[in-house]
Length: 354
Image 1 (cartoon, rainbow, N blue to C red):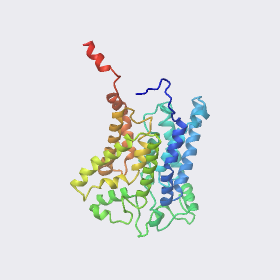
Image 2: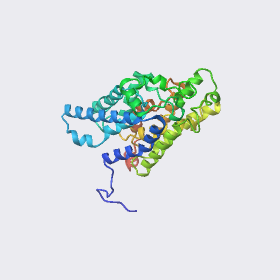
Image 3: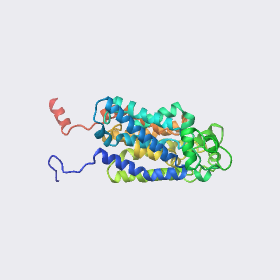
Image 4: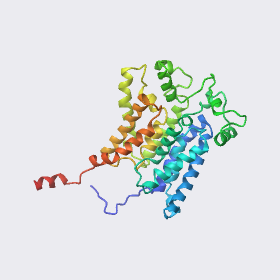
């Protein structure tokens, strides 16, 4: 067996390179989101990234830290990028600014900056907006092919910055589907229908439900899955956390489905609906806030998957990736403490001292 002498001759990724790979791997998902839900996705990205860079620059100056080297690591940019991908495409611009600034200031720099934060900044910003503005944060347009009033570029910009389209149409009007009723995301639609006493097969007969999960959403999740697999192949992220997140979702959702298929969704639906793949491959794998031990990564991912299904099924929110990630972020110190690898020979030395 060969062992390299120190320093080990192994090329490692810099923080900037890793951040660029993360952004690049999301591009297929970005294209899918734009195709199905409009150019508002790009507007959210531009607003969030600009806000993140400006906020980080201001905080670094207040902390008397060098601005350019820290901005160049790309962490603030990636935080904003991931947050923007989770936001509805017609969210008012000032909400995007608020959520992004809060993520950078209170979830990152209050703890000392990159490497010291215990919570995923993007999810902190998302949860702040979701709790504060639940209506706006759950106002997704129907996929373009099902929209009664497709939204153009000019109307998208007008709605984001003024609240209504150029022809005075409101967001509520634009949410109408081709059959005349207000559309929602597949998870939100299913939860609403079940709460009203419908059986799952009846809820799944809606036009928005199709294929693995729903129109548009299955392709969005498939593209994020492909991007995540590319990150694993490039060794930017490990495979343990994404796999354990998906396993955790399956372990909880499958028995529920077999117990009552009229009330509980099949695991495949959960896997390709909402922010599942974005959360499993791009959010949960954050190297700063995730568990760092081999066993701990499995526990961390399984916990995220299980909590996601429990909140989706029994909680008040249709999607729950953000809550699940933040709850498991809190548990990381304890998980790492009880799963840390013992030093080689530790057990033998302990026996000798007895």
